[in-house]
Amino acid sequence: METKQTKRVWFITGASRGLGAEITSAALAAGDYVVATARDPKRIAERFGDAEGLLPVALDVTSESSAAAAVEAALARFGRIDVLVNNAGYGLIGAVEETSGEDVRRLYETNVFGLLAVTRAVLPVLRKQRSGHILNLSSVGGYRSAPGFGVYCSTKFAVEGISEALHVELAPLGIAVTIVEPGYFRTEFLEAKSVVESNAVIADYAETAGKVRTVAKSVSLQQPGDPTRLARVVVELSRADNPPLRLPLGSDTVAAIEAKNALVSKELDAWRAVAISTDFPR
Image (cartoon, rainbow, N blue to C red):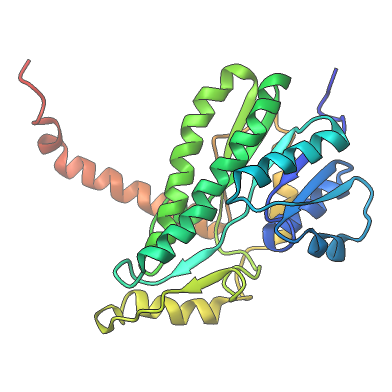
C-alpha cells in the first residue's frame, strides 16, 4: 500500500524554467520521481542533467495528442502519476481594449485550454488509482484582477473556476485539487520569454495600464517572493493529509485577498437590500 513516505511520481508542465523548474528541483530533492515536461525537453536535460528519477518529456499543452503521448511516456516509465502540476502558461500586459483577439485566443490556448487538455489526459490515470493530487498554478491575479493584466487575470479566474468544480467532482474519488496562488516571485515571469505586451497602446490608458507596463519592467527580477521556498512549500503541500482548495503564497497575495474580501463584504452590506429585492415575494 502506498504511504505518504513512498516515492511519488510528479507530472509537471512548463518544467524547463521558472516555478516549474523550481518545483521539479524540490520534488527530486525530496526523493520523488518527476516527469518534467516542456515544448523542448532538451532544455530540461540541460538544466538538470541526468538526475536520478527524472524523465524529460516533450509536451505542447495546446495539443491533445501531445498531452496523451506525454502521459503514456510517464506510465511507461513509472506506471503511475501521483501529483499533477499544471504550471505551463505565460503573461500578457495591456489594457483590455489594447489587446487583440488573436492575443487573447493564443493566451487562452495555453493558460486555459492547455491546462484542460493535460488534466483530461491525466485524470483517467488518477481515477483508476483512486488517488492523486492536482495542483493548478493560478496567481494573485486569479483572485483579484488588476489594470494592465485584465486578460491574463481572466485566464487565471477561469483556472480557479475549473479547479473549484474539479475539487468537488474528484473528492469522492480520492483525488485532491489545490489552487496555488503565487504573488510576485523572483522568476523570469516578467521577462520577454514569459510575458508579452499588447502591440496597441492607447493614450487614454497611460495612467492605468500604461503605468503597469513601466512598473513591470522595474519590478522584474526584484520581486519579493523566493521561488525556492515556494517550491519547498509545494512539495510539503503534496504530502498534506487534508490539502486546502486554495493556497495563497506570498505576503502580497495574502494582502490582496484580504483587501478584496473586505471590499466585497463592504459592497454586499451596502447593496444587500437591493440584491435580495429581486426574488419573488414570499
